[in-house]
Amino acid sequence: MWKPALVAAGVIPEPEKGERHEAAREHGMHALRHFYASVLLDAGENIKALSGYLGHTDPGFTLRTYTHLMPSSEGRTRKAVDRLYEGAESAPDGPQTAQGE
Image (cartoon, rainbow, N blue to C red; front, side, top):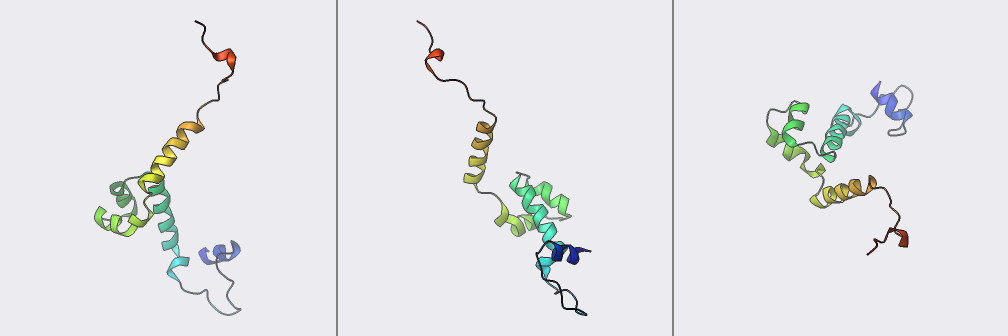
């Protein structure tokens, strides 16, 4: 079911008639697992929790495997500031807002 879905999505080519799909780790369920880990890390999930979700007994293994997917400090900072301003409502800033003396 997985490989035909990848074909339908245009991710991998349709195999020739009578042939099997190409065996490639990046086309298998491992790719879905990697995607899951990357989404959680991007959302700020910690390595210890992710390790448990993935069934790893050693969070150090998870860190070594997925550290390249962890958002940078600069990326986290930008996202935090963006979220702050996304919720801010625009207030009028014309002369009517000036405080009287």
